[in-house]
Amino acid sequence: MRYAILDAENHVTNIAVADAAWQPGEGRRSAALRLITTDDFSDIDLPVDDHQAPLPELARLLQLWRTHRAARLHEQPSRANPAGLHDLDVVEARFQAQGLPVRPR
Image (cartoon, rainbow, N blue to C red; front, top):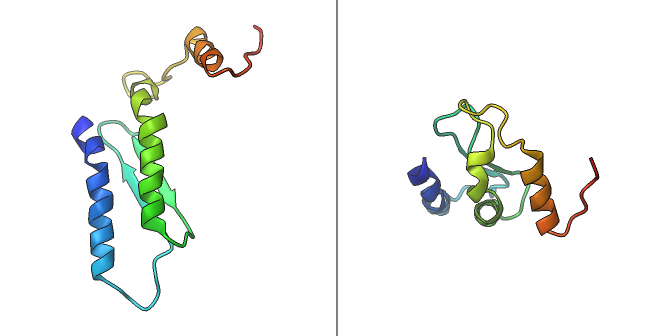
């Protein structure tokens, strides 16, 4: 799985190269990247719809995903752990670390 996620930028680059080689009369307005590895849940699911420059936007979204989501893939639901991360103390500690309000129990 790690190899496939690391290779996501290469997939976006390959899509851009192929798109540049084929120039029909109308430009593209959509792009998407979905990566499903071993579980039923997608590891990456980034759609870009109705955008003037969908491939650069897809690359930007992939960078945001890598910054905010990639490090926490092990916490999302999976076959081995269908509930994902659900320890309230851990979740609340993350909110507090970001300065977000935590409701009392």
